[in-house]
Image 1 (cartoon, rainbow, N blue to C red):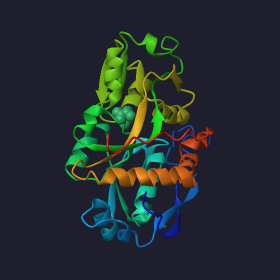
Image 2 (image 1 turned 90 degrees about the vertical axis):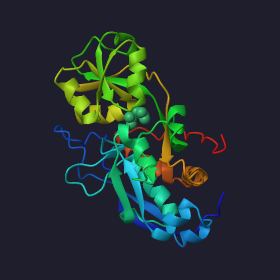
Image 3 (image 1 turned 180 degrees about the vertical axis):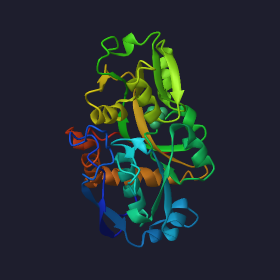
Length: 300
Ligand code: GLU
């Protein structure tokens, strides 16, 4: 692993209390109740990387573009009046940028939806995708995915007054929505549900709320964010029925980024910044940071 460079500490506004009970009934996930977290920014970072690597280029430019979700409370969320997206994924982005000497304010955030994550990386629209992006063999055919930095599993979200769907065993024949380009739709199709795909989760939640579809499905962490926003109207049901390993997407043309990402994540696991990132985002709901996941080798 690379030796750790000298660091400057930046106090940057971190994620809002998106899953906390402080969320108002009107679903204001972009509230001002944000916590702060010190972000380490390496000094003279460009010296740490070999010529010709993408990390060296980014460190020399002092800029990076990162794709995150804008509609997933706790993970990646940007309200209409927010300057920056908030959530665990942007916090992981700040950790990676910091290791290149790039301060949070020099990160360009770009909204990615599930369906455009691969094309955004392939076309160089973004340098990294950190957007609840499960590692899959299929995706790894076209992009690089390092990590995982978080593990979750697919669950179901229904209206609070729905007594019929209590888990994946009850969805046969039901209309279940999710977003196109996600792993979730394929999984419920296998379970006999009628899948309904939308571009964004917000559209899917609205369909559950107005009764057009019976349930929404995606990773449990994402669903909990929505349920926490509208606890009187929505609930998460059943046990997780898949394992989703969140990876960090990079261009397949830049394979050297994999080891840098893994080294930086290892450092963040060890120095407490990963846990801190969790605590000020998803952890705001009162849950403790989970076990740190085991990173996959870049040689695999
Ligand atoms: N983690 C799953 C995926 O990457 C579902 C969530 C999402 O679409 O971002 O497909």
